[in-house]
Figure 1 (cartoon, one colour):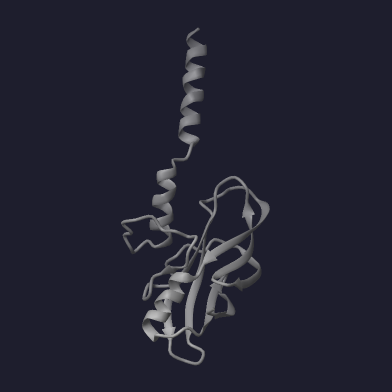
Figure 2: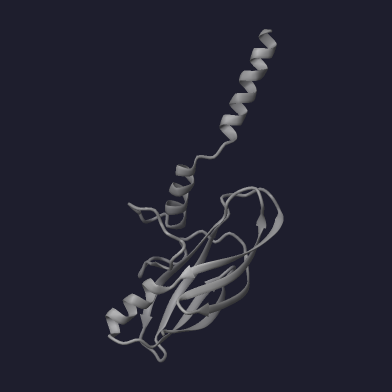
Length: 168
């Protein structure tokens, strides 16, 4: 009987230690993506994150590839593929240097990927839908007119994706 109880307690201990806490994931997302910044609120990766002046080498850049990219109205659609399958992955689009006053005006962004140390190696493909209106709104406030913006998005391992974001 003692062995049985010891076995049950050991099984519960292993189960408890292997479970992830969602609050820990939010903390990791906010502080691993931006280790030098202390965000007081959760980061919303469904929208472009405006962080002008941050060091673009700080966000987590776990491996991934972009299969396609297009902008429909104010939404950036990105097809991404990556290894994983055991844990939730987070992708965040961060504007770190905007607005470069050239023609067209430019913004430098980085697509960060946090795999949460996923040990699995299944090949996953998904589509990201990122709301670009925060960048558009700030552009219009600064320049007083709607126009277009050249997005220079750093992806994966130093590659860059360039897209024209035309405002409606």
